[in-house]
Length: 372
Image 1 (spheres, rainbow, N blue to C red):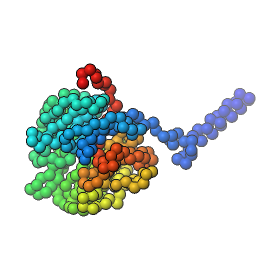
Image 2: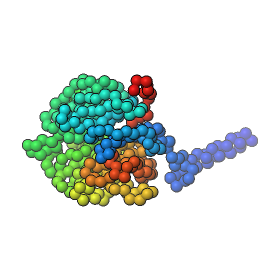
Image 3: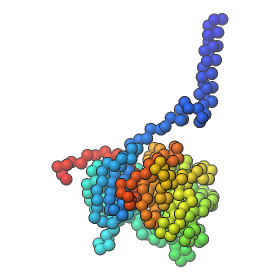
Image 4: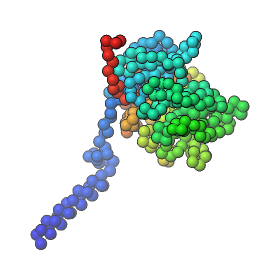
């Protein structure tokens, strides 16, 4: 009888402990879910076209690691999957635009590529995609040599690589009837597999992203000056699920690494005086509804709200937001805590700073100083 009593008491205590753990909610200060996640180490890179300045920063500390000035005008930047190379679009109006490649370990110059365009990497050494104008090129991610090229029927504008399904989505504008067309390319077979036509007044696609979790395309579209939308289109049902009015053409779309959230920047237009009411949206992917909006404030006060690019860290704990091309003024990089959904820091090494950004892993190679 005594052994059974002890066993019964022990069982009741165990049940009580389990009940306490299971009943723990978000208001309980000791809940495991309330422990802040560990933010892994990454690198954030920025190119400032106003000051012609390239820099690398540590994530999560957001501190400056290295920087240098360049003597050319440029645009977007890209990081190789191993984190060892930084590619910078260089405008060369005399001899044709080029890509300058730098070693991320110390920002030393590595080489110049003639294959100019937007570069997308699959996260490994399988393939990379470069597109410009009406051509999509598959390239070797290590040597950047062209493996195969696909010619699109119309000039391309926006694109997105989904590394989960290995599909490349690229938009082109058919001028004959002002239709926006989104082409789908299978990156494994390197073949054009599908195209979706969006007729006017759908609007020209400024930026797009694909959510593999819901099979949705999120498209930032401009109908006319001062009229823009974020449109959600489901590929499975071939239908537009919903549309939300934005302020103007500037902005971007980005999907969180787990696919559960979609960040949208309504960049407004500083040149025309369009100030966005909600510069940074967060959509719930499953409901396809806005979950919240992040106001343009941090501990130092108001931020110039003309936001553009969004870069997530692979662990999804941070998002970094760059400038909108039509900001017409300085816009610092903002660091967003995605768990708390708030801006925690602004990054601006110059008073007049405009940043085009890209993120990647910490460089894994050391530069031999004797060869520099």
